[in-house]
Image (cartoon, rainbow, N blue to C red; front, side, top):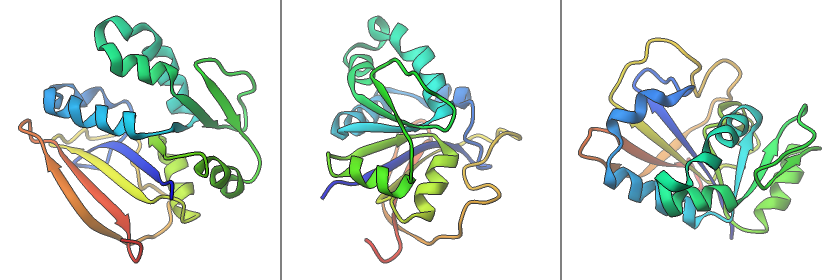
Length: 180
């Protein structure tokens, strides 16, 4: 059965936006882990803001980031947006009932959600997130959008595992309570 994995960089104070603060915590082990996540996915599922940021950056990164960037640029992307009409970067717009449309996409293979806090909250509310991977970085950002802000539904999670990097970053691998 295919799954939806939501993967988000988060600071100690819960900030997820503009994750430039993750740079000092990135190393070869971190890169290998990210590589495994991306290459295991059939497609990406993104919110509009995350899509726009990634589409602006990744096409210029193939020389410096190698096969990871090639995969990032060539993997199918599905963007949940009510405003975008024409997309590049191997992407299509997801419109209509979110539960129905994402469930259809899920039948084609595993979906990886990068960032996309509002989308992640909507998917959690619909019971569609099978794994939540929070990449917790040992930094307090102080301000910014938080993953579980106002309007995100209450939910319970079970810790399925952790991955610790020598830089102090930790991935919490969580499953919806009752689905582990």
